[in-house]
Length: 140
Image (cartoon, rainbow, N blue to C red):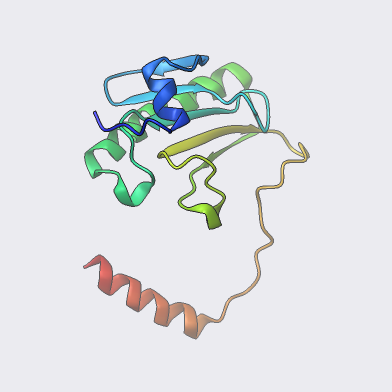
């Protein structure tokens, strides 16, 4: 399995750093975030070291998604939050603090003070359409 000896998540997978495990299978691990945004904040990670979504094999992404759904449902059923954010960042500019693919599961309550949202504003429809064409061409 791909590992980075300096990665905190790899160390958690190996058991070198303790964690509050929620779920584990051959491909993924879910554990509580020890610096939670809200009660119940947890992480679902790919066990092999892949820095971000762009390095992650599609089959492993599918495994993470299955584990994510299982964990998110358990958090919902246990805490009955009014909402739930699934957050995934790629790169420092996106505020990725640990370069190992992971997804945050964050239970939310109305007016909980968490600042994760932005204010929608109308975009330039012509520019959006042109950019959509360029992205569509890359998708194939």
